[in-house]
Image 1: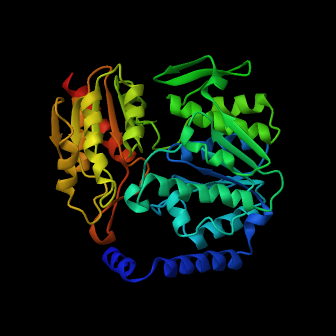
Image 2: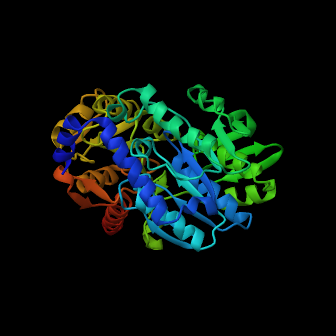
Image 3: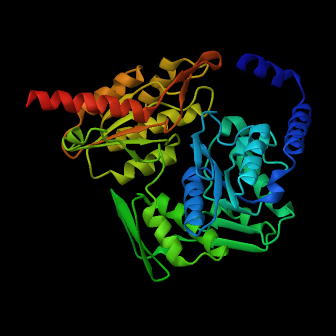
Length: 429
């Protein structure tokens, strides 16, 4: 199927595909009766932090008494009902997305928070969705092979901001990370209420390996989320909540209750409390699949002995980043396991070799069986060390040639192997 699509792209003019995708978007909106007109729609875009920001915004709105829905890379939630997103798509297809918005309307949700990707704009999946607000996390090079250049990637993101600009909704709000100069073009969009957040808004703040503390306009707030990048995500969600007249006490309560989301710096522990007491090291699963996000994860645990498990990038995309990611593992990790990730139609071994070429100083091993690589990494862990498994997060499949899907869960596999190893160590004592 992938080969057929590639052939069609070469022989069919781009404008033909554009018309096709635009008409599908219109048809989806027509079938579900333009549901976004009947609910407050909050879009979240950017390179990193989208899923976390979606969850944070939804959590604060719920704490304030609103009923919410959300659509993200991780899950689909309508009110109190949630199911995992197994589509391997950040933003679902036109019909699925419109159907989800209709479900939110029918469930009498007040808000729906949508994660919107640059890839979605290429297929007009963002069309015919009336936005009330847009939160923009950051912008750095990603999907370059798909878009052709960073400028094209930025233009794809800007289409979402312009959709907000054209929306007929009242009291529109644009919230951007004010410390990211790459978002300057977003701040030029003609929106009545534009808010730029800054890290200085959270001064003083303290970053710990198990959470962070910060002060927001005199209010001291503690969260289980870790890393400076998560503080940026929190600030975006806070700024939007305040634009909705939600008081700081409700915001503080929501953030302090929030425990994070699966696959984003997720700490893996045994289900058995007896085994959990034996675990004296950390196992972390994170979605980090770009050099920038990988570095930020490693930086959190830089004062610990890191054992890294990583692949490259998905087959057929951003191949030049693989050596860079291997180099980051080389810089921060005491041992590096390079393994399979999402090869698609590309040769898995070749991808692994490209990652391995960046690992010069740290000891390394290429282990193409991802389960075995995870097991070996956990078995190597000592007291105080950190096993960091990156690249998949909550992705439900390893993507193989021809679009074949191998069911997968980094968290489940890591937990299973962790429990086995802890039992073995217990028995040896």
